Image (cartoon, rainbow, N blue to C red; front, side, top):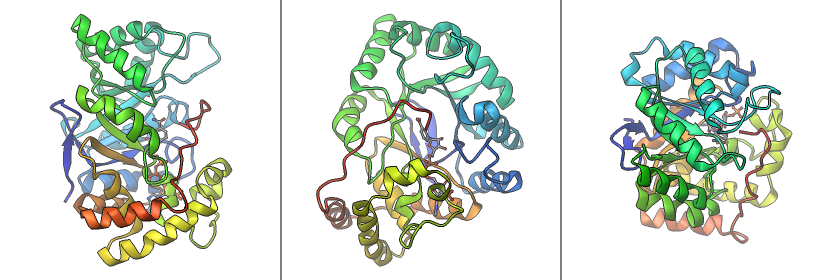
Length: 330
Ligand SMILES: NC(=O)c1ccc[n+]([C@@H]2O[C@H](COP(=O)([O-])OP(=O)(O)OC[C@H]3O[C@@H](n4cnc5c(N)ncnc54)[C@H](OP(=O)(O)O)[C@@H]3O)[C@@H](O)[C@H]2O)c1
């Protein structure tokens, strides 16, 4: 059975496993009929939270997933999208200015075929716009009913604290969620920097690439099949498929086997061990991956198992985050 958690201290509830639309939607990499079955299987498995962005497939992911989601009652869906990355060469068609935010939400809603989005994310911080201007624009969209909750993605602790404080000062809608990268192989930034400031402010975490783009499933134990994320994307393979990570993932196998679960489920249940993580946002190229990943909602890891995992991850010295790049792998 799927489980649901609140988004920080907000009342809305999101499925602990969410489906994202990056790369697998709007770019033609997954056959449209298969992509449709992926979304439908997710919904059948109780996934209610679907994460998109204007930049995914330059608008095409919102259009593709939005068209599939329209068959379901709107109130049963939590639809998120994002704004920040350049959508054209125009000087104002980017960033977090009031102008770009107001123009972008209307374009996203049109592509999604929706009257509102449940969550609107600032996809990165924008050093060229005051946080106050961005926060006020988000507050205004909430008041207009186009956005129900707003959040940030890959913002620093300092930026999150400032946005929250400004909203508190002016009585504006506060950010309720941050979307960072977080997995067994990419954990330090969240654990050291982000969780300590978001937790006391009632800001939930919905985390991306919780399977390290497939690395943690064990699918690369014996090499890189062509029809996989790492087979298609050199930069993703280079980021995660190091000798140390490959060995860690191999050592996780007996732990998962003893529990009678897959390594994907182990990795997702591990990320969800912390109640502040509202959702793990997975990607999927086939319906069977949805079944596997949704199964993580039923797994609770004991203290002994968590300790055994820590030992594996610590070998031969903790994996360290390599920093989030500013390029368009988003
Ligand atoms: N805010 C941001 O900046 C940001 C950045 C990146 C992503 N995101 C969000 O996070 C979502 C998920 O990112 P992600 O796709 O990198 O997440 P992920 O879940 O770590 O990786 C997903 C990929 O791993 C493979 N996979 C998934 N489940 C599997 C299973 N059970 N067995 C075997 N292989 C499996 C599939 O790729 P193959 O089948 O192709 O191998 C799938 O596309 C995105 O769609 C997006 O919504 C946000």
